Length: 257
Picture 1 (tube, rainbow, N blue to C red):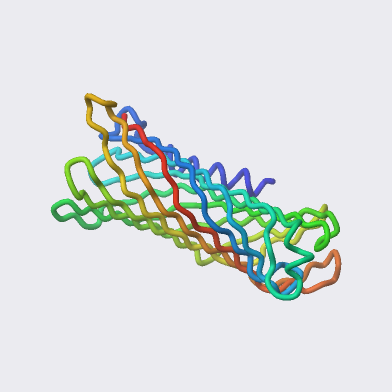
Picture 2: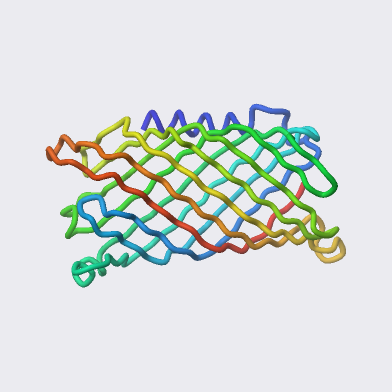
């Protein structure tokens, strides 16, 4: 819990430890809903991957305190039920797996390239990830929770296509992650791993006579996290290296102020 509190504090610091929004040239706040897929490969106590469709929700904030500085914060979360495993175990495992992943991050970027309608920012940030898995047959009712955090490299590109239409892409990479594995009341900490993600967005600014400062957007988000092999000492068992992937399309709106 202390690690999570520290991570949240650092994320908020990355977003707020700058001139306040009132001094920003522009600021925006957005929200999206969508649907995608989730895969956990391999399952933590076996060699089979589990996959499912999942609902997605996301929120993001963006500040430009100066022409050269960009600050962003974001959260994305999902919920998947009835995840199915491949192979011979599909019939027994397909009815019970529930998963809920989420990610929160903050980043500060500096303008490194600008030409015509293209702007590219690069910088650093901090992120937290968590995925919770529950399946009675696999872990005997215990909840498995993986919580990871680490500093990230960050790049963001924005391209104005027309006066009211813009495309953007963001990439986040955290190659040195620290994970905590929790099963029931037992936990293992300081497990190695990584996290990589990217986001694509197409945003259309509505005419002022229709809705001032409001834009609608469609997007695509994708993330892959990995956790290294470790020993779960509570049961004296080796846990294999594992990876989690989720992706999906979203639709939503943002307001500029």
